[in-house]
Image (cartoon, rainbow, N blue to C red):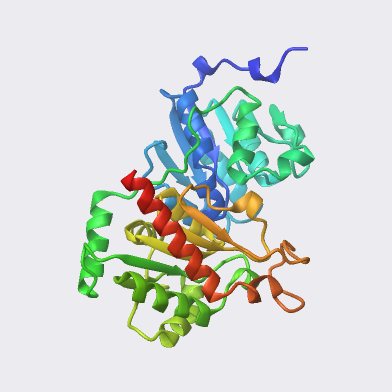
Length: 358
């Protein structure tokens, strides 16, 4: 039987559509897969179809030629909206659609757009809409998300020599953030500790504001420098609690940055203390040293894909439960102490300094 890897001619592919996933963190973890697509179709025009939030993450990006927005809560809502985005895609004459998103909706739109090659996992009862479907085994489900997306592509001989997260901020964006920080009293040479206390998925993933504050105060005492709190508008209340609980001053920018500004701010940080969140993965993509605090989620599939990150978690019987809200005593987070986070941060920084000096 002929392998699915040989069912299309890569040399004949001139226009590729990539359907992005919908969560910021997951989107960051697809960047090695996007790199594999770019390496395999190096001369093709590659378009990313993404929700408005994820579109910001890739505008610009070195491996993407064009970003199209799929606003399923706005002008593309409902069946009429899906037909509309399909018509918009049809005008682009794509040769192939690679569906990183697993939803039925992604395959339906590619089919409605009459894209001749439609590739993705056979999930969500959408296999009949795919021309190149990849089976999803039980083992594959438990791969790290970076490996999960690459595994599907590998089934069709789309591979990458080096697996790395990759995001881009422009020189102009970096200069603008430098000015924002300077106006707040943070100089270009200051050691900057980033605190990321939010987690969009649910409250169960969030460590406690007073503990973040205590860690920030202790690391500043040990290391010097300044502290900045980052987060979305939904996380501003938590960020305000941390700022109020800290003994020293900090810059609280939670709820005051766009996705692009958040990227530039995160890249500027010299160290990061974070929950399991999308911003955690942004920090990993920029190689920011970090301590990532995990509770109800599974670090084997969503840990920072970085050799400069350390995961702090407690081996409690009920974790990982993957619940948004804890129905009991939140033991997975209660048992993560300030002392442990500070000690892990200190050891990580020392190890990285020794590596640089070696």
